[in-house]
Length: 479
Image (tube, rainbow, N blue to C red; front, top):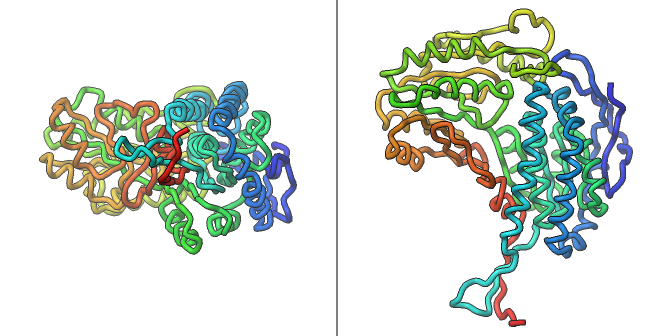
């Protein structure tokens, strides 16, 4: 078991002010792998005070210097990639090979994209040729509370910390208590990179305790939260008393619309994307909408692909999927699989219980349901596990209607060789992102959703802007 490490506040490692111990569980074994202290209100207040005190000097630091700190951070991050990969694999169950490549790789990828965006960003710019003495100045919001989830830990930490740091905000990070070890390592990296004391602070804890203190704190100017829609609603209500900015990246129930002219790899690609990270991604294509002419073939293929997905311990090398993060999630997923069966969906792969040969650990069988309609529970609720629902459709109009008939609006996917149709759907689907024919979003593209999938955008220029205030200045004197 790893040695307990407490909180990073004002450039120092400090002990919790009375917080209880919390055992971090390895989901592959169901055994404790580390102990952390759960933060108290006093711990959160101390972190906010440090960030508030550090803000004026950090705001005044030239952006080129702030970029240099992040560049140094990237060097350290890449040098400690193995430590980070092992931590995330152990605490949240990402297979070690995937943790090294995707989970760790996401962090350096985002940090590099922020530097690229910042070098071309005009923080002080003219309003326009019509107003030579008017300027638009982008200034940091202030103290930012950053609350991150367990499913893609470094992806979310770097999307928030990188943008906040370059924008000139000071910050308090509260990582998920389910996967806090990576954040401890990240805090060590921030310290080694030489960020001034108080610019970055990290306090472990849960949402009810530290999270509530931070989101309602009078000296916190902004909250950036990634997690469930339920928690996002609670945070918005708590933050409303102080009218702080709230940036939310929440759940999803993405539609993957497969037309009868889709490429030969569309179904396999969709199933494997769904199963990636054991289905624990908010942008997972969890509803596969298939045009009637190729529906039976797609169902057969999807079942076969899911059946071929191996499941195993996170510590083992390979392309298998690992466990889900904890017992609560495992039980939720099992209940929803049973609900799908009870409501009449056709089970074509997987099903309830653990995969064969795995009697301990929070493992879920890669599961595919066919003959689902969009009113079934498994089509409405975000399952957050390796469970795919296949829904038939006849016309393009019906596909759009089904895809948009959800409270969520994060990512939708389109598979067709008809470019005009693809472009039509891109404009008609109500989601913050649309990916077509297996093409991923380019570096610096914004990540974020509509409706109950949240607000704001992360990554690149849009990620920087979320941590900036816009100031209009008239009568600016020419220098």
